[in-house]
Image (cartoon, rainbow over all chains, first blue to last red; front, top):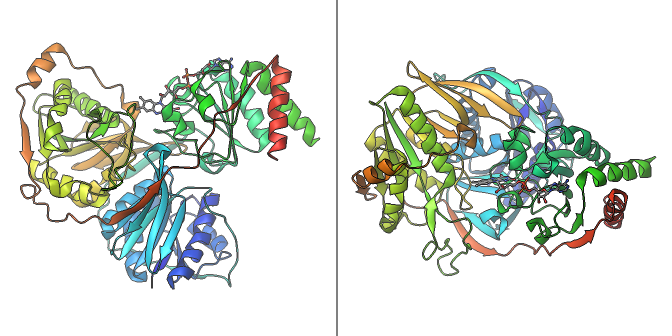
Length: 325
Length: 258
Ligand SMILES: Cc1cc2nc3c(=O)[nH]c(=O)nc-3n(C[C@H](O)[C@H](O)[C@H](O)COP(=O)(O)OP(=O)(O)OC[C@H]3O[C@@H](n4cnc5c(N)ncnc54)[C@H](O)[C@@H]3O)c2cc1C
């Protein structure tokens, strides 16, 4: 028997869809493994989020609204997760494959002596053996990798890879006890938001990305944002655009930025370098707008329209908005 | 102050990558290996700190590579690192994150450190899990995704990049940090640096030297295969903006995306 624990990443109680995807997946895996499904919510605003998680098919939602979790980086969170995982017993811990989630997962796995599988898009279960399916080497190969006979396994799960489905009889809420007091050293002095985090780039159903071809910061707001809004999506960027300071690095997609798998990815003025490709190649449909019909992006997009982005994008936005009217 | 920088050698990104069907490991022979580009940023950050802190600060490279590749580290020594410790042991080949971090921790403890600096990622399909795991194994705080590093009075202050911006974080040393590319472009080795690097020491250690006992990986690769293929694009020349927009709109309609 093995249990499954979903870690709920949030900011003052605001969370993203991936949290509900993990909660749903925790239940499905727990059923196959004959164990129970849990979620853990820590820090300011945890109570409200925990409440909304009880509508998902979980057995227990564990909560700790402890200010230390927000005052100190990572360490209190790892202590709570370790304590909860040890109390629950042999389990698979699901963490979102986000910047913060990856940090949590690598620390927790080492703490628990657990295996770590990253960027997981599927699970394969054979008896009690759990294997994770994940793209590797920048997506050139898809691997199936099992947790060995250790008590715990930690998986970072790619947003948008699993469905979120409320259900179940209503999870029980439990408060986690504070771990033994420790002198935490990584103090968070302040926090600066550079990009609105209303819609997580990683989980947006549509991403409209801009590159060097846009030539400056302004077209991101005057050209791309209206198109993204019309499609109900978010805007992203290539590294060249982030390096130029046109957009914050938090919008960068690719090897050193975010990995996205939206239903639709529109690349505007992006050449399609390998480092960009690895962050978006698993999108459902890829459309490129580029002046150059031989740009590398033609090798892996579904449609490449050769032309000037400054002409095409506003016309496209208008067509979409008109079709909705 | 003693700074340890972890460096990994990775296959050249431009070379074709493949996994050996027999060993299920990334084939590393016959492929150009280069310094992991992200580790060059880690080294750059360490060298900048050394410049600020003065000459009694040392920068030591820590690497787990096959003995045959150890000379590749001369490039990092030429950039300005003082010496290198290389952990090279057949027992450790194919290690997962857990074993790699445990092994690196063994050597780092042996060298002694105030600050361990890691790159944010490895350019070979691995998962960026080593810095966090290494911090755990060393029992020190792990300040990840850091830029704008300042050290004074035994405390490091850095901006930590987040999903939506950054946090300012302070931490008393000893600690581990992983840095982002915003620390600045890695410097080129000067001619003097290249000459000097020939005389710098590269110490070779076995797993036993490093006190590494844990060599069983926690994960096992069962199988692998190609991803669903992406075919070449339909390429349409747009006569003008309106025509280009219409082509895209019709295509999105066809796929029920609008
Ligand atoms: C270690 C490392 C890590 C990296 N990580 C990343 C990463 O995570 N993400 C990433 O994106 N890159 C990354 N890069 C950089 C990558 O190699 C490319 O340099 C970058 O992606 C190029 O960005 P771009 O496509 O916007 O610019 P370019 O390659 O300059 O392409 C601009 C495109 O715009 C087109 N264009 C110009 N004007 C117009 C117009 N008016 N209308 C339409 N099209 C136009 C041009 O034809 C061209 O194809 C990394 C590089 C390194 C070395």
